[in-house]
Length: 394
Image (cartoon, rainbow, N blue to C red):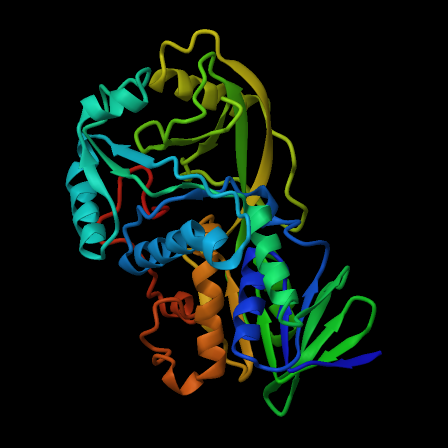
């Protein structure tokens, strides 16, 4: 079968649905989204849903701040529930990273981000059981917090459906089709062909496979991320999210008083090649992370492990995304978000819509920071003030 569209979007996570909605708001014709499985079924549904603006790369910090503003206004402006909770966000580093940390906070403040250095006494008021001995300096973002990634993708989906975007699930895109050097459409696993002069691939870790037929290298790999739930023995429901860049862990308090804990140590990645991402957690990971949790919270003697799950980051060599055009006219990509995508998703949709609708205003490819070609050029996007162990993941 052969079908027609004006724009095809491949992928229905927060990225694909955000892009589809933004395109529809610009009245860009028949927009069709093709998804291999189901809405928010892959990385979106596995995200921890933390909202924060603490980045060492100015453009990412600015985009995260713009995304945060959207989450804060989503219910008021669009009547959608995205699960936003203004818990606040606390982040701290050790003495060896203090200079870099202070430089990053100054940069973020210069961008208008609501962050400030925070005294240990103030931290102890909201996290009274946190051991601060090895944390040399900390910062607080009062408006940051958490939201629900699946609810967010659902909101983008419903908003775009209201503007007549069409979604087709169970449609695995296997090949991008070209004609006379331009994009022509895609072919799905069942042999169907969808014709469109514009194709946007927002397929996460599956993106490199989709590009294989064009022999365009897209350096994205799956990196496993394990997360655990614990009952600390005290109710932490209304405490801020914390990011501990000494013990390399972060915690998201849940409304039921438990804590979701994730790993910030990416020095020895666990790559998942050519297979689905595992769903469970390993015994060694659980023991290691709980040991680090108890070093940060030594009074949690009665803490209980409640379970855990795994997801996969879609990472690029510099742990930063690929957003924009490809060497094939009409073909665009938004992938490789390396764990940052959820909080950026409200910004990426309008950004791609602007690029597609007005390519003449697009910055030159040889200087655009998110360009695909930067990896072949060796011009990676990196922080000017990286942290030691956490490195460029910030």
